[in-house]
Amino acid sequence: MPTSRSRPPRTANAAEGPAADPPSAAASAADPEASASEDAAHGVPRVELYLLRHADAGDPLAWRGDDADRPLSAKGRRQARRMARWLADLGRKPDAILTSPKARALQTATIVAASLAIKPQVDDRLVGPLDHEVLAALLRAAGAGSRRVMLVGHDPDFSAIATSLSGGPVALRKGALARIDLVDGAGVAAGSLRWLVPADAVPER
Image (cartoon, rainbow, N blue to C red; front, top):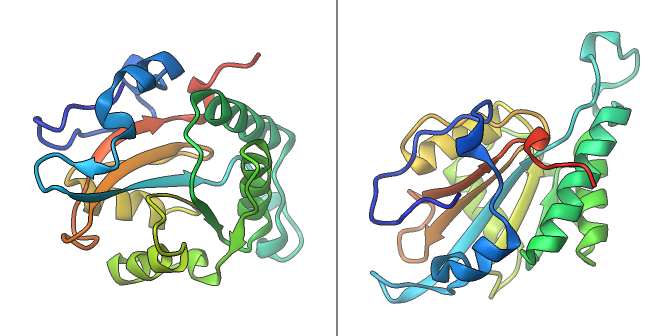
């Protein structure tokens, strides 16, 4: 469930059970902070940052080709499709989706973007390393006025930047989605972790 902004950033891990359950569409609609475009405390526009780690791509040691070409496994495709359906049902359509060009990330992004009627943008910077300066550049690349931005990429970069922004340890497993709210005027120095949704927490239909 979304955390309260009156509390300190939540320590979260994608391996958690009930605490990591994805919010429902009804809960999102009922939560005024879930869709607000302005931060009440600062009176300035807020950016919702979505970090989606690529879904399962099998055993990297068993892959004989270039690692950049390693595709999603059958499990990974199922994970991406479940996340895509869940986001579409939730109504959390990003203004932009930027993805790493590596096959497993691009395939994850393509599956999710198709369900949301968005065309993903490939950005080589999402291959890594990802720091606050690169993150700021990616948000600018998403376009002026983008208040809900999804990045699709890799670990350890995503877990590291999520931890740095939220102030508590965050681990994104394959296919997991984190939402971190940033505030314009504060740059990308800090944020509030709102969701951490493991891929397997999203049910099959």
